[in-house]
Length: 183
Image (tube, rainbow, N blue to C red; front, side, top):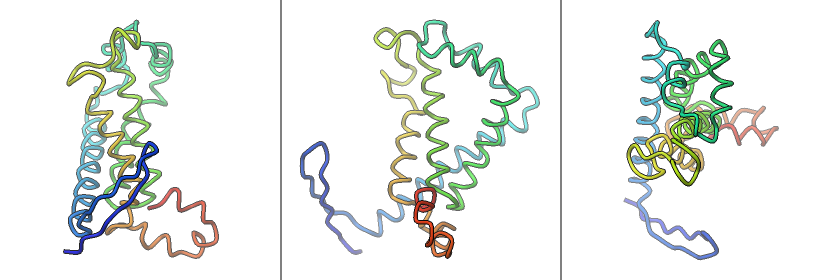
């Protein structure tokens, strides 16, 4: 297995470390598949449940003291928009992550959805009631958002994904900005 050394500057400090390209590849692919499964399963469960609606979650889980309460009240008033965005959005995000199609865009949309779920879990003001279900501030939705950011930064859609082929398309080569959506 090939060992590589990475040198990066983080927070104004130089950091160097060695890593295995092979194990990095396996871990990226494994994390991509797991995140895809989470989104696909979430989307399918919601689509197949005729009783599911975002309204029920929002009415029962977003407290009035939540600093984003007004935003979620707006969402409650528009389930005809929010419900399909959540249900079909999760299915499409998961499928794109799994197949590596427009991976960075899918990861960004998935991360955005996770941030909204995280914000909904605030129990009161910032100092008094950050999410505490599984630890102070950190919930699984925040972990998913950060993981999606990392996978997008690595360009995980190129690893056994369609983006590796799509990026060789003349349209993409002529419009380099499209690579920000792929990878």
